[in-house]
Image (cartoon, rainbow, N blue to C red; front, side):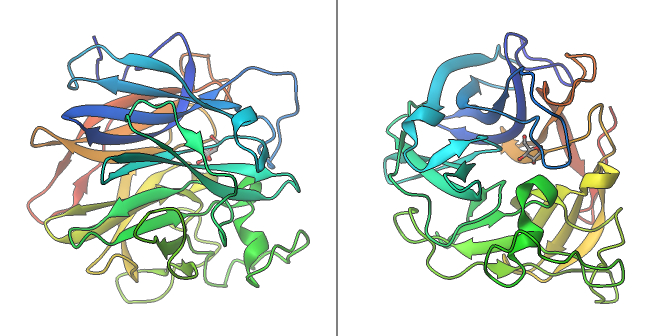
Length: 321
Ligand code: FUB
């Protein structure tokens, strides 16, 4: 039986959960963490994942089922290593799995794989999405059926190397007083297999409309974006990376600008923090991960969940672990 704040599964290490309701059930698309003897560093070499498994629960009170291998690196023609945080969506009879991996040149790109079932197995497209880069895709389909992909992550996720629109391995880092690096958003084509337009950089400001600065590590964007809509507002939530928080910002428009609001989840055990937010049966849930099951080994994480609430002004009440 699944329980709040307990690993959903203990036979695998799982991380970066993207939760959705498909066919009346909760489906969770996590990374599959693996053990290895490689280095641990700011480049994220410790996250050496090679495949995806899909998890599901009939409801938050039901047992969690592992549907087995959904996609393996060897079946992705363009990818070379590191299958990081995925997401999934559904349109017109097809389920889509979006995932980042390094291409043959070692540059992170974002690919798509499709299936007739939310549990997979998924078949990968021959090429990554043209114009895609960096990591952590999160796909949101709005009420008007327009589909958007939010993505991007600093450091190992290479986002700061794309400031000119081209990959520059030696790109200079921003100073602390410069506006922070923004997540990217791109509208997807009708068939969800390509970008309809070039990715734009998302701006997050404070209440006064001043962009959050690169040195403001408690509020600036680092990685792991998620989009959900609540009472007509767009909520962009993300990890602050170096300060290990899940925070959020809101807007009246899907591509922003967004105004910073506050913290959803304080640091968990382990360096990374990554989440998703989903409504099921009239309640809202936060899916997240920590490294408690492995005793704090950061590349061996476990996916958990907790109920999420809003106050009467639509502010998210921080989740207490
Ligand atoms: O799991 C690998 C990376 O760690 C993800 O892509 C990031 O969001 C962080 O959780």
